[in-house]
Length: 177
Image (cartoon, rainbow, N blue to C red; front, side, top):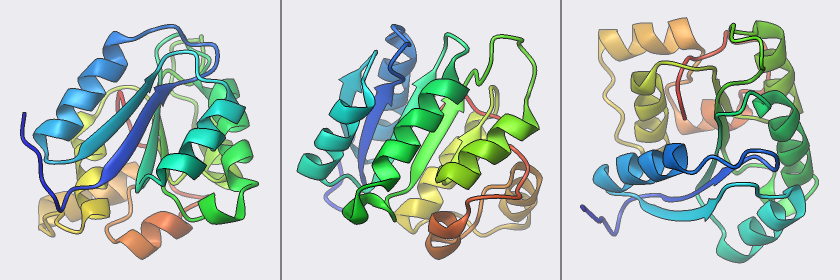
Protein backbone atom coordinates (compact mmCIF):
# COMPACT_ATOMS: atom_id res chain seq x y z
CA UNK A 1 0.00 0.00 0.00
CA UNK A 2 1.37 3.39 -1.00
CA UNK A 3 0.70 6.39 1.20
CA UNK A 4 1.42 10.00 0.43
CA UNK A 5 1.34 13.02 2.70
CA UNK A 6 0.24 14.99 -0.35
CA UNK A 7 -2.64 12.74 -1.34
CA UNK A 8 -6.29 13.47 -0.92
CA UNK A 9 -8.40 12.32 2.00
CA UNK A 10 -11.29 10.50 0.32
CA UNK A 11 -14.36 9.29 2.17
CA UNK A 12 -15.83 6.17 0.50
CA UNK A 13 -19.21 4.61 1.27
CA UNK A 14 -22.16 2.75 -0.12
CA UNK A 15 -25.62 4.23 -0.42
CA UNK A 16 -28.14 3.82 2.37
CA UNK A 17 -29.80 0.80 0.74
CA UNK A 18 -26.68 -0.83 -0.70
CA UNK A 19 -25.21 -3.68 1.39
CA UNK A 20 -22.38 -4.52 -1.02
CA UNK A 21 -18.84 -4.24 0.32
CA UNK A 22 -16.35 -5.55 -2.24
CA UNK A 23 -16.85 -2.57 -4.52
CA UNK A 24 -15.95 -0.29 -1.60
CA UNK A 25 -12.86 -2.33 -0.77
CA UNK A 26 -11.77 -2.16 -4.42
CA UNK A 27 -12.29 1.62 -4.46
CA UNK A 28 -10.31 1.97 -1.26
CA UNK A 29 -7.41 -0.06 -2.64
CA UNK A 30 -7.44 1.81 -5.94
CA UNK A 31 -7.34 5.16 -4.13
CA UNK A 32 -4.68 4.06 -1.64
CA UNK A 33 -2.47 2.70 -4.42
CA UNK A 34 -2.67 6.16 -6.00
CA UNK A 35 -1.35 7.68 -2.76
CA UNK A 36 -4.57 8.88 -1.18
CA UNK A 37 -5.85 8.39 2.35
CA UNK A 38 -9.22 6.67 2.55
CA UNK A 39 -11.90 6.52 5.19
CA UNK A 40 -14.21 3.69 4.21
CA UNK A 41 -17.56 3.98 6.01
CA UNK A 42 -18.76 0.71 4.49
CA UNK A 43 -22.16 -0.17 3.09
CA UNK A 44 -25.66 1.04 4.00
CA UNK A 45 -24.59 4.54 5.11
CA UNK A 46 -27.60 6.72 5.98
CA UNK A 47 -27.47 10.33 4.78
CA UNK A 48 -27.28 11.75 8.31
CA UNK A 49 -24.29 9.55 9.17
CA UNK A 50 -22.55 10.53 5.94
CA UNK A 51 -23.06 14.24 6.66
CA UNK A 52 -21.88 13.86 10.25
CA UNK A 53 -18.74 11.97 9.18
CA UNK A 54 -17.97 14.56 6.51
CA UNK A 55 -18.33 17.37 9.04
CA UNK A 56 -16.07 15.52 11.48
CA UNK A 57 -13.43 14.16 9.10
CA UNK A 58 -13.38 17.02 6.54
CA UNK A 59 -12.57 14.91 3.46
CA UNK A 60 -11.20 16.33 0.22
CA UNK A 61 -13.75 14.24 -1.71
CA UNK A 62 -16.63 11.82 -1.17
CA UNK A 63 -17.18 8.74 -3.33
CA UNK A 64 -20.49 6.87 -3.12
CA UNK A 65 -20.66 3.47 -4.79
CA UNK A 66 -23.75 1.54 -5.86
CA UNK A 67 -24.02 -2.10 -6.88
CA UNK A 68 -27.68 -2.78 -6.14
CA UNK A 69 -29.08 -0.40 -8.77
CA UNK A 70 -30.45 2.17 -6.37
CA UNK A 71 -27.61 4.62 -6.89
CA UNK A 72 -29.89 7.31 -8.22
CA UNK A 73 -32.25 7.32 -5.23
CA UNK A 74 -29.54 6.82 -2.60
CA UNK A 75 -27.18 9.29 -4.25
CA UNK A 76 -29.80 11.98 -4.66
CA UNK A 77 -30.71 11.86 -0.97
CA UNK A 78 -27.06 11.77 0.09
CA UNK A 79 -25.83 14.67 -2.05
CA UNK A 80 -28.84 16.82 -1.15
CA UNK A 81 -28.11 16.20 2.53
CA UNK A 82 -24.43 17.06 2.11
CA UNK A 83 -25.18 20.25 0.18
CA UNK A 84 -27.42 21.50 3.00
CA UNK A 85 -24.27 21.92 5.12
CA UNK A 86 -22.57 25.24 4.30
CA UNK A 87 -19.09 23.80 4.93
CA UNK A 88 -19.73 20.88 2.55
CA UNK A 89 -21.08 22.74 -0.48
CA UNK A 90 -17.74 22.71 -2.30
CA UNK A 91 -16.61 19.19 -1.36
CA UNK A 92 -16.43 17.15 -4.57
CA UNK A 93 -18.90 14.25 -4.51
CA UNK A 94 -18.75 11.40 -7.02
CA UNK A 95 -21.40 8.76 -7.42
CA UNK A 96 -20.76 5.64 -9.40
CA UNK A 97 -21.95 2.18 -10.21
CA UNK A 98 -25.49 1.23 -11.05
CA UNK A 99 -27.82 4.21 -11.04
CA UNK A 100 -30.92 2.11 -11.75
CA UNK A 101 -32.16 -1.45 -11.81
CA UNK A 102 -32.88 -1.48 -15.56
CA UNK A 103 -29.22 -2.13 -16.37
CA UNK A 104 -28.92 0.70 -18.90
CA UNK A 105 -27.17 4.05 -18.72
CA UNK A 106 -29.54 6.81 -17.68
CA UNK A 107 -28.36 10.25 -18.80
CA UNK A 108 -31.41 11.96 -17.24
CA UNK A 109 -30.64 10.43 -13.84
CA UNK A 110 -26.98 11.47 -14.13
CA UNK A 111 -28.04 15.01 -15.05
CA UNK A 112 -30.43 15.15 -12.08
CA UNK A 113 -27.64 13.98 -9.74
CA UNK A 114 -25.29 16.67 -11.04
CA UNK A 115 -28.03 19.29 -10.73
CA UNK A 116 -28.49 18.23 -7.08
CA UNK A 117 -24.78 18.70 -6.40
CA UNK A 118 -22.82 15.64 -7.53
CA UNK A 119 -19.53 16.77 -9.01
CA UNK A 120 -19.17 13.64 -11.12
CA UNK A 121 -21.39 10.70 -12.00
CA UNK A 122 -19.87 7.47 -13.29
CA UNK A 123 -22.61 5.19 -14.59
CA UNK A 124 -21.05 1.69 -14.78
CA UNK A 125 -17.86 0.93 -16.60
CA UNK A 126 -14.94 3.33 -17.11
CA UNK A 127 -12.44 3.26 -14.25
CA UNK A 128 -10.07 5.35 -16.36
CA UNK A 129 -12.50 8.27 -16.16
CA UNK A 130 -12.74 7.85 -12.39
CA UNK A 131 -8.95 7.74 -12.06
CA UNK A 132 -8.66 10.88 -14.21
CA UNK A 133 -11.23 12.64 -11.99
CA UNK A 134 -9.28 11.73 -8.84
CA UNK A 135 -5.97 12.76 -10.44
CA UNK A 136 -7.46 16.10 -11.41
CA UNK A 137 -8.73 16.64 -7.86
CA UNK A 138 -5.27 15.86 -6.53
CA UNK A 139 -3.80 18.41 -8.91
CA UNK A 140 -1.62 16.00 -10.84
CA UNK A 141 -3.87 14.85 -13.63
CA UNK A 142 -2.07 14.39 -16.91
CA UNK A 143 -3.09 17.07 -19.38
CA UNK A 144 -2.65 15.11 -22.58
CA UNK A 145 -4.83 15.06 -25.70
CA UNK A 146 -6.07 11.60 -24.63
CA UNK A 147 -7.18 12.77 -21.17
CA UNK A 148 -8.74 15.91 -22.63
CA UNK A 149 -10.66 13.75 -25.10
CA UNK A 150 -11.75 11.34 -22.36
CA UNK A 151 -12.85 14.27 -20.20
CA UNK A 152 -14.90 15.68 -23.06
CA UNK A 153 -16.55 12.32 -23.76
CA UNK A 154 -17.36 11.55 -20.11
CA UNK A 155 -18.15 15.00 -18.79
CA UNK A 156 -15.23 14.86 -16.36
CA UNK A 157 -13.78 18.34 -15.94
CA UNK A 158 -10.03 18.83 -16.15
CA UNK A 159 -9.42 21.32 -13.36
CA UNK A 160 -10.46 21.46 -9.70
CA UNK A 161 -12.46 24.69 -10.01
CA UNK A 162 -14.44 23.24 -12.88
CA UNK A 163 -14.94 20.01 -10.95
CA UNK A 164 -16.50 21.79 -8.00
CA UNK A 165 -18.74 23.87 -10.30
CA UNK A 166 -19.86 21.02 -12.56
CA UNK A 167 -23.43 20.39 -11.56
CA UNK A 168 -25.38 19.99 -14.78
CA UNK A 169 -25.29 19.53 -18.49
CA UNK A 170 -22.30 17.21 -19.01
CA UNK A 171 -22.80 13.71 -20.31
CA UNK A 172 -22.54 10.89 -17.82
CA UNK A 173 -19.13 9.29 -17.18
CA UNK A 174 -19.02 5.53 -17.05
CA UNK A 175 -17.23 4.03 -14.06
CA UNK A 176 -17.71 1.65 -11.20
CA UNK A 177 -16.73 4.34 -8.73
